[in-house]
Length: 150
Ligand code: FES
Image (cartoon, rainbow, N blue to C red; front, side, top):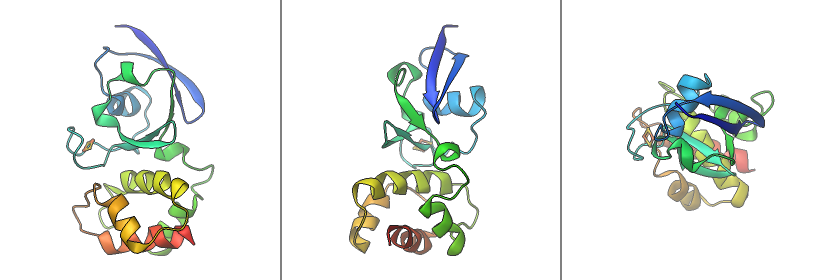
C-alpha cells in the first residue's frame, strides 16, 4: 500500500492505505481520531464533517488522494481545551441527546460561523439543514449556534 502524509490538526501524520480510502476511514482507523463519525457513507448525513482548508466537507466522500497536502481539522483539533464558543454553547444548552451526530454538527457550525459571525435564525437553519440528527435535537442545535455567535 502506498504511503501518504497528511496535515491533521496542525500535525503531519503518515500512514499507508489504498489510494481510494475515504478520508473518514483514515481519520478513524489510521489516526485514531474517532470523534469524526460514520453515518451513511454517501455524503448525506453530515456525521463525518471535518474542515478541509477551513471549509466543511463530508470526509466519507473524499478519497485520501484528493486531500493530500491540504489542511484537515477534526473535532479533536477545533480548540485547545474543548473551549471553542460552539463547544461551550453545546454544554451550556445541554444540546446532545445520543450525541452521535454532534461532532459533525459542531464542525459544520464552526465553518459557517467563521464566514457568518452574526447569522439570523434562518441563516443558521439553512446552514445546518444538511446535518441530520436522529434524536431531532434541532431546536437546541440552532439555539447553541446562535449562542456561540453572540
Ligand atoms: Fe459522511 Fe454521512 S457518513 S455524510
